[in-house]
Length: 482
Image (cartoon, rainbow, N blue to C red):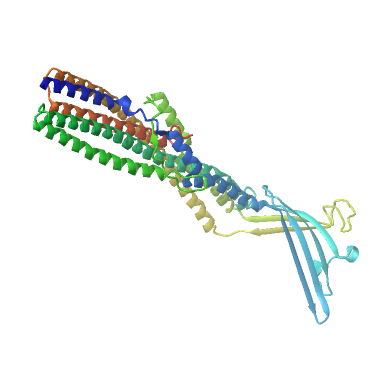
């Protein structure tokens, strides 16, 4: 009778062990709906508020450029002055002009004046031949300060650089969002399959306890076997409950990344389960070097610092302009090439014109020289930041690569360990069949096997997290996040 009981127990444990093999553990039931990391990324990139905020950054840059271009918009100006005193019209002055600033130093303009009055200032006198009207056209040119650049042109160039800055910031924000999402996803992955494993181990322990109890009641098992089976069952019930709580909490963490097109939060459905579609890959030294080169050229932090240096260079050029004296020349052609009634006439540069020269120059230039010195210090400080950031990026990327290699080695070793535990389990089952083992030894081997499989799931999740960290360190999107 004892041999029959052992044989039944052997068959039971052998079947139960097969049910918790790695292949069956990752074979999802028909009711499950695989929710891949790529699906997760797609939902985040389309609907997550942070992703939508990041998508606003290029539009902000476009509006910044539009704002800077507004300084070059043509401007219509008009003035009207009238003085009437004791029934006498002293003067009536009207002046309307259209100015068209350009990206060159030259500002062309065209206008019309009409001045009348008893006590009109001779400077404003216009002959009544054309109803006191006078057409004028001309240009204003800075010959000193503002010839090479000015505030308007500098603002436009910096706004165009701001677009690159916002593009880099967008990449940075999206990459960080996807990194956080990847870590959350793989934590959910670990907790889900650990929960499945705990459920399977609890089922095995429950069946063994039931059979052992039946054998005890039939006189084929000792009381201590029933106690041992009961203890094992309770231990695994506790482990399963802990795994279930962790699985539910990680599912809630995944749900925080899920939003619909109307910006409503979405709950993760119970039938959605995580899956691992990509196999463990090996990053070759050549591929690592390619990532390093890409990080040095396009990492968002380095791109932002490079843009900042370019902006400072424009500021330096503008500051150098303020070291020059202000010398602005303006030339007005009066009633050329048309008279006010529209009749065309010939150009004459030595008659019918106004010429103006404006000059100013601060004696000590203390403010201007201080501004130049400050910008030199800012450039030097930013260059130090760039060098430090570049070094930090390279080191972080190398460290992430080393950690990934280490995780890959540990993963392979853990996989072999699980295989060896399966062999030990099979050997113990053989001993049980031959009457050379007992329930206690079987439980010990089973517990070691389940712990090894649980650790394997955790290491697989850590490996995938580290893979995401590697690409984030390089400043690029993780695999599947394109």
